[in-house]
Length: 248
Image 1 (cartoon, helix red, strand yellow):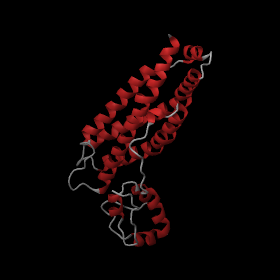
Image 2 (image 1 turned 180 degrees about the horizontal axis):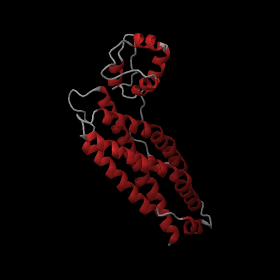
Image 3 (image 1 turned 135 degrees about the horizontal axis):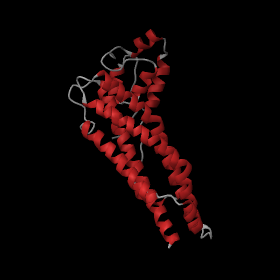
Image 4 (image 1 turned 90 degrees about the horizontal axis):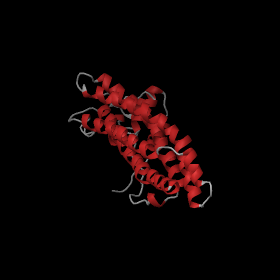
């Protein structure tokens, strides 16, 4: 399948646009434009009623729905430690900081508005809140303490610096323990959300808001799994191996 830009015309409907790409829901929420059951008015009409320029809205929708492609065979294990940690911070950490709060809000709003019809979404709402509470502080710890420590140790080891062993003894963090705890905690939360939400598959005849909430959760799930893989399968084991060699 080739990458293509979402076609947005004056007579397009918000609900159809969001059905094609859930990222556009953020733009409609920004301008207070209904995109679920009531989003069946032509965009040009909606823009006129709200005093919004259609061209401006179209541009924002195109940016939000811009297709992104990442090659599936990147050699992450061959990247140097500075580039790998920078990639994790600028791609995965930044994504979580930007997306997780908004996703929690969208899931919470949907769960509260559809409690009777989809009571299980209340549990998903609670799990999302726990996920955010656990992840956001952990990102700061990684950026300010864990990653700088790993980079120092790896650089000292690769350059045969005499202070490398002392660095590990004085600044060493329990990376192996942290790795297991993080993986177990996040994996447990994600697996619970998957199970409760039927692996993010919406029920038949579900509304657009329901599909948006599940799509965001699925995207979050995918990003977290890649994030955890880069840290727990590549970055942390590399640092732990060096630690062990230096401490022998």
